[in-house]
Amino acid sequence: MEHILGLVALACGIIVGLGAIGASIGIALMGGKFLESSARQPELMNELQTKMFILAGLIDAAFLIGVAIALLFAFANPFAATLAAAVH
Figure 1 (cartoon, rainbow, N blue to C red):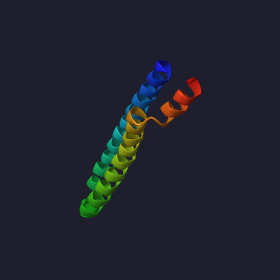
Figure 2 (tube, rainbow, N blue to C red):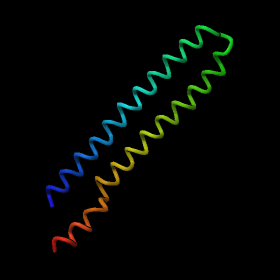
Figure 3 (tube, rainbow, N blue to C red):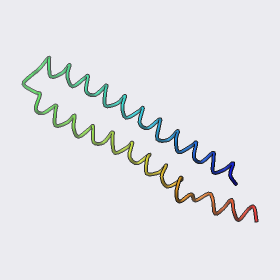
């Protein structure tokens, strides 16, 4: 039982870690492209900034969904009941 719970904890860490890395890289690339495009066409800066913040929110939302799934597995593990029933 402890072996399974340890693997679940490891999986939660991987979910959160890879999600954070992916969100950070995505926002960094998007911010760089925003700066490049606003330097080329400064008259579009307000429109591009609005779209950039919407996309940043969507990228963060995808990361937070991964965090919520990891918390679900960490605290309300649906596999623990199945495992306990199989052991006893």
